[in-house]
Length: 294
Length: 282
Image (cartoon, rainbow over all chains, first blue to last red):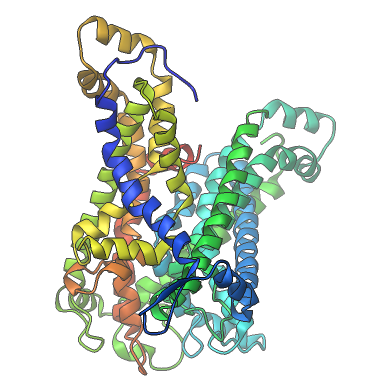
């Protein structure tokens, strides 16, 4: 850890300064997390009278449960879909803004505000647009012969939540791509242009490789976003349906723990999720350490 | 831009205009829907031009509440959202400033441990520990209270790191000078460090205000009394009427009201917002 040369000699004061942060961290983060780990090794009988220690049984059941395996698959499809759609759209928009000189600020303003819209609100808006009876998009789709119905069709429901979740994330990716693009030395691009490389060639041989650290960072951030911050999108629209088709992991934890009251399984699911977040955070931080080289 | 290529410039503008339209379209439709009467959503497709019912729709959701779905008025909920967002933003900034100050300017046993304990919160979002956290809050009798809505969310690793990073760039001479002049640590913190951190505080505030306003799962779990509902969590309740068609005009009026404050904050403070977003990821 980096250190300061000049420090204050007070012995008790730093503990007082840290107290509020550490108290909240302990009471509302560490303690519940520890409880989840503990609970994941226990099983209560149906009447809540007796609790017994069952080792890894909750986990074994979890990974033998077709519903949970389905949820893992659904989460993977959803997260990759959101990451791909929002990254590609944001990159195209950022490249376009880079080319416009005088109007770039205005475009940026018009593109960044969706960041501020709550996931649940985003969900309701797209739910409305895609409403099978009165929605405008199903109407347009019916003209090309597609009968949209996310209440029945698994694919339609998945597409709906992916679009809604990506819509919100475009602004974030766009800003980071823009920052990444402006960090590429202009002299490189100019040198390539003088050597006769056209815009497409310059993009694939210089710009995109130089952006790869940004892209990788955003990929991780987007996967984390899709896995953990989209509860509102799912809850406000499909509620995991139809028939589990959009039941992502965080929604399933909520459903099993709060509505199904299956504490052991819900706790085991929490622990699995924690392991996933920890893995993703480690990847993200290792990348930050290396990023300096560019 | 290196060389002049009129076709590519035109294409860029075209792509951007399409992008802006796609991004704005859902909100446009929501705003239009909030100006229409209830009968416009019975059949056909969603109207695309404004109607004459703007004032009455907004008056109904803000002050009267939607009787058909038993939803209370939105006005007080917006106030709840505001209280929650401000408490979370200010709380996070305050406790993070203090802990970053302690970690950077003091040497004490367990300093590393404290640092790592704060770091771990980054890896434990509410969504993954819902049930046990709910239980803790229930045991502390914080359900249905402003304290319950905000305090469990105000620990912040991101804010602590941001301020730590910033404090490390503050020249050592300042602290030395303060010490030579006989200023204690708290005086140094108040009179030198805080004013220097002004821009960082403002940038972080923008991000955290949005974070607090947009909370969904947390208020959904810990509030049962309508007095403590927040606007974002109430929308779902309104749209979710059993066996009936939702009253889209009032639902969309609520949608517009729910996104207005955070969107305004981003648009009006765009520079701070971009700074906050990019810095807090470092």
